[in-house]
Length: 208
Image (cartoon, rainbow, N blue to C red; front, side, top):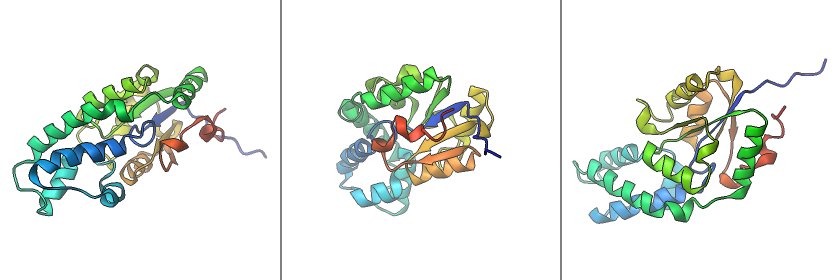
């Protein structure tokens, strides 16, 4: 008997490190803000631990480790968000392999969602800068839910908005926190190393 492929209805994407190369941008923007207080995170700890976490969670961890004076998290977060907006065009230029991918998936009838640990405002700015915003049926940032990744809430919320069940979805994620959230949601998961892995051929095994 031939094994039947699952019938997927939706494909959900993280943004940073999946559709745009923004993890480097978040690293740069956060260190610009931290430099005001003589603090810094190194590249290896950013990509090994902090990548994929909301900025507030990163700052909370740095304060817990006594690498930041107490009481500055909200101020540094606001400064970091402004730096992020300033450098979005540098890291979120249109990538036509991603635009072709989105057009193809929409033409095949898939619902699309983008679920990010970035806040809604910068998430929308990044998608618009990359010319991807209009392809998505659902877009969710971490300030639109209670529990950010690695909790699965953002994906469970997206399933409800899309009108699908978890087994009808495929999620593309890169960072450990995002992969954990995707797997906990009950959907199928495609882990990638970075946005260079995300192109049409990646979906050949599941497209029907």
